[in-house]
Picture 1: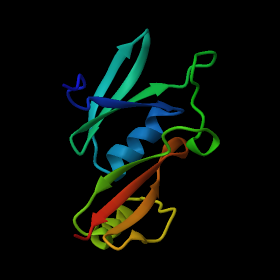
Picture 2 (picture 1 turned 135 degrees about the vertical axis):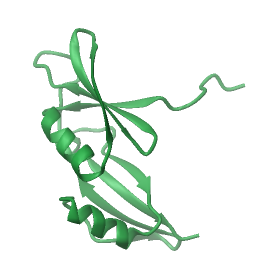
Picture 3 (picture 1 turned 30 degrees about the vertical axis):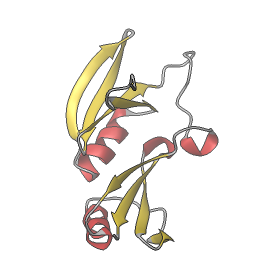
Length: 130
């Protein structure tokens, strides 16, 4: 049997909690779960689409400093499904989202579009056409 039970959270490095809140809460309507202290530093916790997103501060001299996703290997975007990509894009654009792509059709049954997020990350909106 598999030992992993379920997805719990994802952790990001963040250069500014204010920018993170403005984008994820202000634009994407994430729930702000507040700050928690981990290893002596405050971390910001948000909840979006049922998933917990943790943001660690960029502390000079610590392992894994905040480096924009475009300058390193590893996670560079997170993706969420939407019912209608055109309506969703218009809605998020009205809330201040900055899109970094037009609507793309990577396969016959998928439409996607990417939003710029803080620290070089992107958020992908996906409409499944099947």
